[in-house]
Amino acid sequence: MHTGELAAVRVEWRIVDRIFFALGSISGLLAVAAGAFGAHALRARLDPADLEVWKTGAHYQLVHALALVATAWAAQRFPGGPWQAAGWCFAIGTLFFSGSLYGLSALGWRFLGPITPLGGLLFMAGWGLLAMAAIKGV
Picture 1 (cartoon, rainbow, N blue to C red):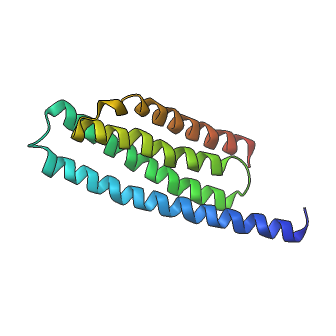
Picture 2: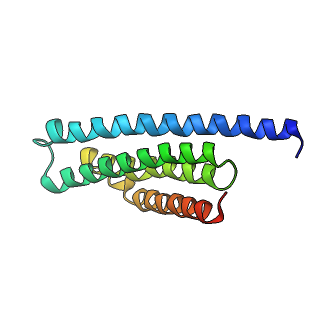
Picture 3: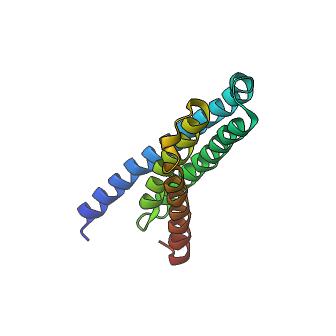
C-alpha cells in the first residue's frame, strides 16, 4: 500500500471508531434509562414475567454498549481485522435483541419473538470476531 492509501484507511477506521464509541455511549445511556424506567414506571404496569423480560433487554443492552466502546478502542489501537464487523454485530444485535424484548414485554408485540434469537446470534458473532481478532493479532 502507498502512503496515501494507508492514510485513507486510517481516516476510515477513525470514523468507524467514533461511530462505535458514540453508539456504545448512547446505547449505554439508553440502557440505564430503560432499567430505571422498568424499575419505576413499569413495575406496577407489567406482570413479573414481562418485567423480567424488560430487565433482560436492559442488561444485555448495557453489556453490549460496553462491548461497542471496547471495540472502538481496540479498532483504533489495532487497525484492520474483523473489529468493524464485530462492532456492527453488537450494534445491530442490540437493536434486534433488546429492542424486541422491550416490544414483547411492554407492548405485547409477540411478532417480535423470532427477532430476539437473531440478535443473540449477532452478539455471539461479535464476540467470536473479537476473539478471532485477538488471537490473530490483527
